[in-house]
Image (cartoon, rainbow, N blue to C red; front, top):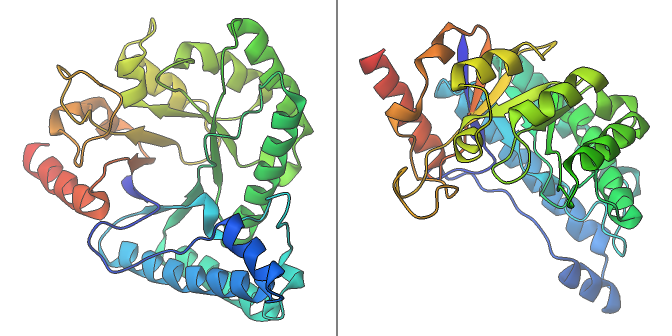
Length: 302
């Protein structure tokens, strides 16, 4: 069974998630207004939107939904930090988290997380690593609350020495809490690390590799797409997850890394249809519209 995943936001469906800026929250504090009440209302609104998103996915045969990292805005911001127990509405918030978790379970919707690019575990800068680990612990809490089984990150930068950079990454992963480690995954990227680079790391530390086919086409290695797909698939101890997107201007365009509104059906590998089970997150600008079009085209062609 292949399930397609929707990433974070909707293109046409009237479902919206809120966020907040540190500047505005700190301004509220300076005006003697309660920033916690403001943040709790955003979280409650996001939980309502998440419930709608899960229901939408269930109704439209979308099997997975990636939740935006700012679902609980500014949770790790050094000047704003808070905990859910700080809110007067904490009990209601926990109840709504449970409702979303149970709804996703009932409808069979897989929930995933993909922390922002500033999470860099292999940075030589200790402050960057510390902030990255704090952000991952926040994601671990969020994953636990909603029942997500994937916290997906990139390996980071090369910093002039790829081997040393990967060694630093392997040293930091064991320091994370169990709830983060048991959900953590790595993903090949389009600038620094290929599947060939990351497969030994994933095997050594016991975490899965999310195969991004677009990134692999931009930054190839010795493996064919089918070989990389199979090798990445084998790193998983639960349902594997892959990414697909198409370049905005096609493969003859100037910037191959930019994402198109839709998935070019020719970019979808036939080999993936033999992988069962598999979640494929669709990283296309048209979001749920792109998924609907891809599913229709796949039915017509394959």
